Length: 176
Ligand code: NI
Image (cartoon, rainbow, N blue to C red; front, side):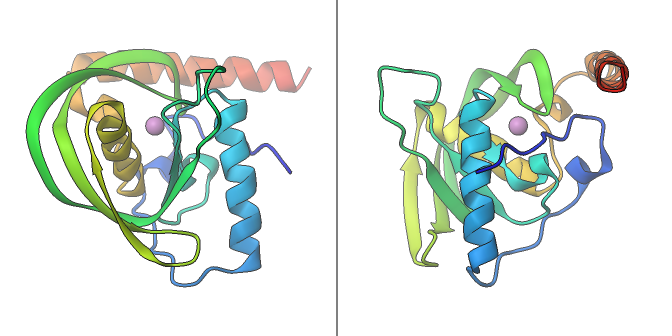
């Protein structure tokens, strides 16, 4: 098992439309194991493949990931699609690709998502609460969208500058 590197904003890979998955290969299964482990290792409740530089339509979510008293229950969503949504809710979000930044975003309150599991069997999830937010946030990643796209332009620019500095500092630490 390997822990994958997280792509940090701003990065062109976070702005691409990811490609649908058409077949489950051994290589993909191996990737999904590393991918899931990476989410836990980085203390995320969700992760989308473009966040580790793989432009494929797959996300993993475990809304209990931060709670050590609960057992791991990662759910893989292949080619996820929001088929219906209802209501609106404001929620404070963060993202492993925009570290240490938390901003309030308006999302749909409930969503119905159609996706495929690791055996390419279709399943439907009706979600509310944190799962509904996580699904919308992660599916956005597959379409090149970040949660900071929903906030003011001024705040967005400030955060982007901060991230550029963060990446520069990270690079100089790694090169020492
Ligand atoms: Ni994210």
